[in-house]
Image 1: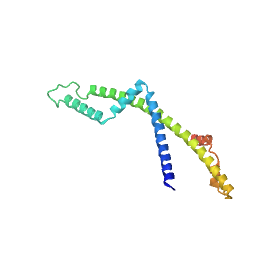
Image 2: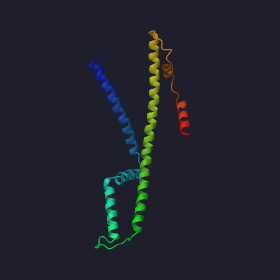
Image 3: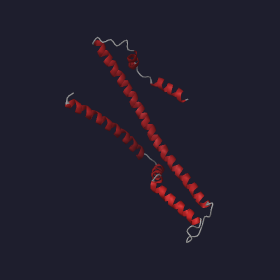
Image 4: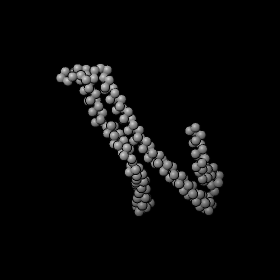
Length: 176
C-alpha cells in the first residue's frame, strides 16, 4: 500500500473517531446547557461534597466537636454532651441533603447516558444495514467471477437483514 493510501486511511479513521467524540461531547454540552438551576446547584454540590477537602473538613469538625463535648479541650465549655444529640441531628440533615443532591445529579447523568445509549443503538442499526448491503454486493461480485458461496451457511445468515423487532423480543424475554 502506498504512503498516500495509508495516510488517507489514517486521516479517515482519526477524523471518524474525533467526529464521534465531538458528537458525544456536544450531546453532553447541550444537556448541560439545558440544566435547571436546581440541577446546576446539585451538580456543583455533588462535586463539592464528593471531594477530599469536604471529607477532611468533616473529619476535622466531628473530631473537634467530640473533643469539645467530652471535655478533652478544657478551655471550651461542652454544649452537646454524650450521646451528642445535636451532632446526630446535624449529621442526619446533612446526609439527607447530600443524598438528594446526589440523586438529582445522578438522574440528570442517567438521562444523558440514556440518550447516548439510544444514539449508539441507532448508529449500530444503521451500520448493520450498511454492512449487510456491502456483503450482498461482495457476494454478487464474487458470483459474477464464478465463485460459488452458496454452500456457506454462515454467509447465508450474514446476508439476511437484522430484524430489530426480533432482537427486541429476545431481549425482553431475557429481561422478564
